[in-house]
Image 1 (tube, rainbow, N blue to C red):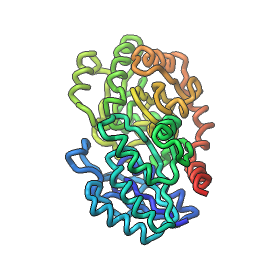
Image 2: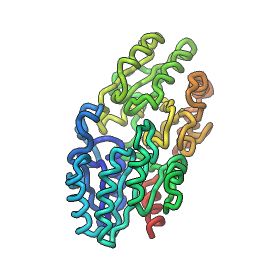
Image 3: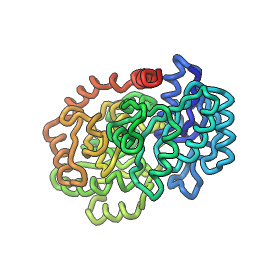
Image 4: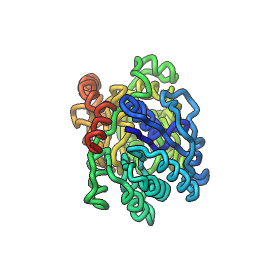
Length: 372
């Protein structure tokens, strides 16, 4: 097939760009594939981070055409006409928030006028975590221009059916993020980060309110007099930084926190995961999480709340623990159980047996089955 992927991609940074890079390389095994990405992904005023560009080493240095302006309708028409002329068999979008729906929906409608191109979207979310007025209307505008839907969890599938029940769709679990390298020795990773030995848990990724870092702080407060435990927080604040630091001070967690709150370059991700005993996802809301797939790549157990599709990937009592959301006590109990029952080695063994199920080859084969 001739395929065009339109999405965030290198030289832009972040999990979606990594996803597209890995997808591109797998599709390239049997197809002619091109990637089109943004020259302006977000207006600077809407972007909470420090940079939208990849600055470190990454395995996702793929060839991409930097063409799309997310807020310029004249640009959407131009890009749509270009794709229409090129006549790909399949145009793939990676969709995660309604902000992009007008752009994607317009490009899709124009491209499909060649009577050759079919459109597939891979949905991280259909209904966003942090909803705003007009989100559903914008999402419907894009979804009506799509022929095939890949959903990364059952939660997203149910959200799709609530809006578009007649869609041709398939649930394909998020593949493993294999682009961050292989696991390294725990002691070597800790030495690299200048961390002392001891019990270390990890919260990784952009810090937004729905991800529940405050819940984890309260759990840590419960545990601090029972277990000598430290929490690595690795990722940029996309919510109010001072609010979290104030809570940490109020709870007396200064000695328990290790803060690495700049953007983590791709080349450094392996150190944070390899240094930790387990990864904690205390989310209030989720569809799925790429963090679970990074943890799986590094054979790290995950303790997460029972939201979205997290329980579809994390085997409760097998590869990690699933706990009630918004419950610092339940989360603290699971962290305590992980250490007191020495679950790390058992969980790592079970994770290793699960890895193949989440390969990129299986994911792409699922796409072929959907569009055949």
